[in-house]
Every structure is written in structure tokens, then in C-alpha cells.
Image (cartoon, rainbow, N blue to C red; front, side, top):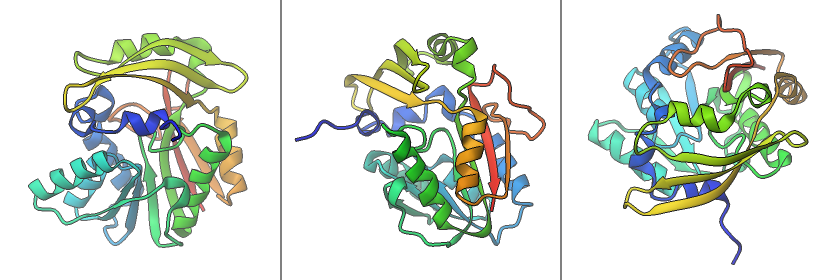
Length: 255
């Protein structure tokens, strides 16, 4: 039996604890930005890729949008469904692999926030498959809004110190971070406690991208307009030029 990938193990029985992580606390402001990008047009169909516990899916649904949420993790989706049912919301949540989405030009907009699959995959080719699959899911002239790890950040700052400074008691912790300049991958030991109180230790690695890489990848997929900004938790804005101090970048691509 093959060993589970770290991102599969991470999200097993981690739905409730995930919602308490520091990086999940910006939902309202992030949805405000998405609404502005959509000109508050509630007729648009939205695909939330790597929806996790459904925080953006649920918030946008409450605001009157038709949103489909997909995620690979059964545990995360169960938490999303539970939250939606508690708020009496009917939402289409589906368990799918972001690399092999079953949609063909069905959505007006796709969102993929807080590393919703991309860039967690173990190879660049697999990460590219996610971008390609999402692109195939949205209509001609559609829009793709996502965040990803900023490759400029680790060149000037410590990822381990950043993660430590932004976490709180009970959050996952990250140790022994090593940033590989040849692959732009941060390797680390992640420790956390799942929803059942079981302590877990995982060897993880995530791919960081520089802006020109993202631009080239999206151009190769046919996007005509690509804008990249700094992604500030809960305060996305087109006014925030990307800098080396931004841990994540905000990408807005239009076909």
C-alpha cells in the first residue's frame, strides 16, 4: 500500500480545528473583494476549488450567489455540509480531485483561495494540471481568482518565523523549514492535533511561485489578462502591489 501524501493526511479529521487556524479568519473581507470583482452580479455561477470547510462557499451563498464547492478531503467536506445545514443552506458540495474536475465550461468564475490544492502537489506537472482543469471548467471570457505562495518571500524572510508569528495556541506549528532554491519548495515538519485530539507529525512541502512563472503558466492556458497583487489576509485589494513582504500573492486572470 502506497503512503498517503502529506496533504491527504493533513486534512483527515481536521475540519473543526481547521476553522480555528489563523489563515482562515479573513473570509468576510475576502468575499467582499470577490463580490466587487463580480460587480455584485448574482447571476454568475461560481466554482470554489479546494473549498475546504466551505467558508467562502457558504458566505457567498448567503449573499445570494450560486456556488459549487469541491474538495478532495471527505473530512473537510463533511464539516462544510454540516455548517451549511446548520444555516439552512442548500449547497452543491462535491468530492473531486482538482486535477481532474468533471466540469466543461460551466462556470463564470472560479475561486481557489488559501492554497486550495494548488500549490500543494508533489510535482510542478501536477500543480499545472490543477490550473488546466480549473480553466476547462470556466466559460469563455470567464474569470479565475486565486491565491498562492509568493516565491519572493522566502528569499528575504524566514517562513518558519512568519508562520510562528501569525499562529495562536492550538494552531498547527511548522518546524525545520528548509527552502530549496532549485525547486522553490519549502520542506518542513508540521505538527498539529486533529479533531479527535490525536497529535500528528507530517513531513510536508509546498511549492512557492514567482509572479513571472504564474503569468507564463496562465498565458499558456489562454488567459488574456493577468493581474497579480499582494494577498493580505481578509483585505484583498487591487491597490496592494506585490512585495517581498507578502507571504501570498493574489492572482486575477481573465480569459
